[in-house]
Amino acid sequence: MNENINPESIQQTGIIISLSREIETLMTRLGATAAGLHDKTDFLAPKLTPECIKLLHYIAAVRNRNAHETTSMTQDEMELFVQSCESIVKELESLLPHEEQKNVLFPVKDEVLQKSESESFDRDFIRQLNQVWRVLAWIPFVHILYLAGGVLKTLKNSAIFILLTLFYFAGIILIGTGLKDGNNFFWISGVLIFAMVWIYTLVMRMQEKENKLHRNFCIIPGLNLVYLCYMIRQKTVLLHFFIYLLLIGFYTAGLIFLYKSNGGTFALVLLGISYIGGMIDSVFAGWKK
Image: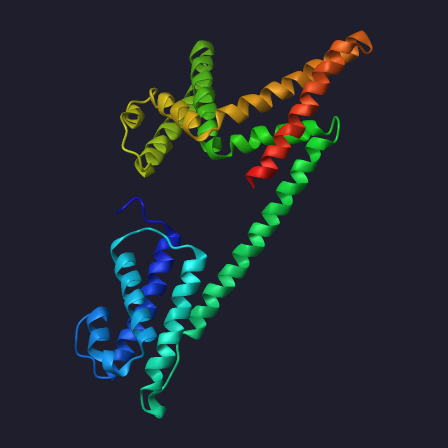
């Protein structure tokens, strides 16, 4: 099975093929005996308008591309395709006897448009959340929540690998403690956790699109830690991650010095660096959106 296939492209291909097949059926009922949309279009060209011919070739090109490739179309491209099919169906049906005219494309069109409205709502909601999150950076002492959120955001894509790494070390600790103290429950639990992490890592390895040498470490129990660390490195934006950690470090050190010295210029400087750094990052985050 092709690893590049994703559910969205499968759904789009289904809609494209379904609409194209309906158009081909209409063209066959109009007397087109050629095979394929392009040839059927040429066969019926004397009966069709130039705009209809152009749209039919466009629909045929999209159908052929999606039948042989796994690339996804954007929502705008899908809407354009559905609207083109609707226009074609109307023109082809107008050439049929009145009693044979039937339009089946509107439910599909409604499905695509409803999906577009839902995705638009989701994007607006996420955008509002990001805006609220960035406001935290401008409030002194509360900006630590913004910095902590930034750390979590940079680790979002590598969260599963971080969890697996933690379970990996937990399994090793349980095995070592169980063997040292003679506790069978500990070392058996550790072996089970270790085995589950290894098996799950193997599953993730098989799902990875890249075929690189580091994936082979997963085959050897124990060395799969190399693969997990590599994936954490690959999926974590290290620059932003360390910037957030550094600013959180300045904030923490500033509070410690502020508490120990009952004030102090150095503590205020550290807190100021943390606060200004959060504001600057918030501004750049806004520009990137």
